[in-house]
Length: 177
Image (cartoon, rainbow, N blue to C red; front, top):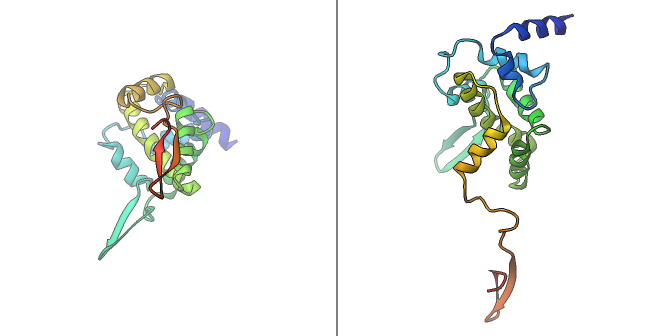
């Protein structure tokens, strides 16, 4: 009964189509994203405000010569959970999100850290679409991403590395050198 009522109300919201356009934002998460941002476009001036307020942005703390990064404890937990769950679900629907998540895991990041990092990126995209009133388009995003990073190495252009012994020392060199 509640789920049906929430679905009906969400479908009546002017931003429903926009929120529904995001990968992984299904019947449960689209209304939560609507609630997360609201209807007032002037509420947030930047994506960074949302990232910090929601607890997705990491907090850097330091004392003396030590520095560490942790998640924000003082934040609306439901909002942080909404963005975290959405980022997790987006991995199954968005190619770049899957690649980014895998890249973070390959760097040794823990699962939840990698998901929060992905949510951090998604909030920037969500904010821009929300401010402009434009639904998300995966192909347009991929093209814009390729324009911003034209020199990303491809699998074919990857350099092959191997060990080579020179004067009794082992060093890594590119194949063919």
